[in-house]
Amino acid sequence: MRKSLLLLAILFSSISFAQTITSKLEDANVEQYELLKKVNQYYPDITLTKSITNFYADGKIIDSQQQFDIKGTKFSSYKIGIEPGNKKLLFEYVSDETGKVFGDVQLFKGNVVRTTFTERNNEIEVSINGKSVYLKKV
Image 1: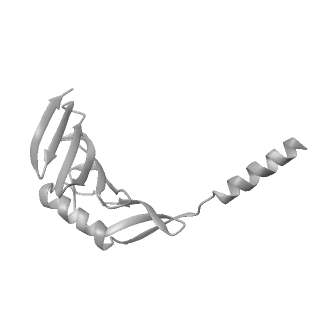
Image 2: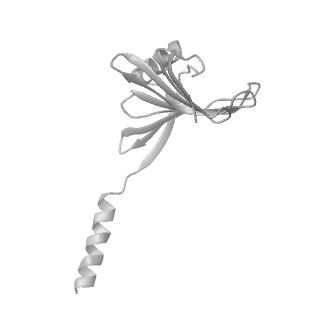
Image 3: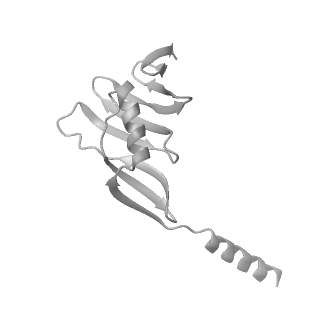
């Protein structure tokens, strides 16, 4: 009896936590575009585009990503993701010139703070409003 009650409890609790996740290719909303515009102002290697894929769970955005056509560019891979809340974005790109470069850019007390990891040079760099404030080889 206890085993069957436990099984039913697990079954019903897992059903209640199930979410439907969908994705839509659409124009960036105002907040997303403002973040991208502000980041691009200080860091032009973060591309400014209006097209974005939003991932929804039960009607709320849980992740956003930009897709890029990299044909004819120096990149073999280029990805940008915007976290919910539109205060932080993640980036990753790969090129023959730079190797793999990744990190994040976030808004902090009116500043645009970027943390960059460059694998080829084994460097970590922190920049505020486009100006490097910390650089370390690892």
